[in-house]
Image (cartoon, one colour):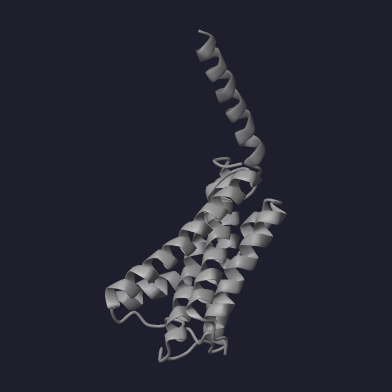
Amino acid sequence: MRYSQKGMAEAENKNAAAPKSAQGGFVFLPLIAGWLIPGAGHFLLRKWGRGALLAISIVCMFVLGLSMQGRLYANAHDILEMLGLAGDLGSGLLYIVGRAMGLGADSVQLTVADWGTRFIVVAGLLNIIAAVDAHNIRTGRKL
Amino acid sequence: MFNPSHFAAVLLFATFASTVFGITQRETPKRMFRYGLYCWSLFVGSAIVLSWVMYLIAR
């Protein structure tokens, strides 16, 4: 009996916390903003520290990848290129601006350039994780 | 052009990936830090262990 009462209290607290974090407005805004600009989803939710660390990590990884002469995938001729392109697109505006400015190597000729290509792809994948995290905070699924 | 050694690239990769993993996979700052440190150790530790394994296989 005592246990169930405690459980009920916790459930009530959870329900009380959910509407507080789920403020008004478009619920997918932090997800989309976080995808377009690394860390922006957390900034919108006033999670300044987390947003700054995420932004620094993802942007640094993307820039280091480019400076290692990594490749920005542009075509999807085979399955590996398709996966690379999907990863790159996770970076949002970083990828779009990078492509528009013609950044990144056309072909990978050095070992370092291969690592750079991986850095760029992983930066995109990490950005997707960060954007989904912002969405979870927005919906009250995470603190 | 930035031209790091293989180990420096591993350290950079581990640091950035662990930061994102720590922040997104845990809820409190203390647990985020601990989980980030745990991921970082696994990234770097596994790279060192696998390097030695490959070195011994190649000999």
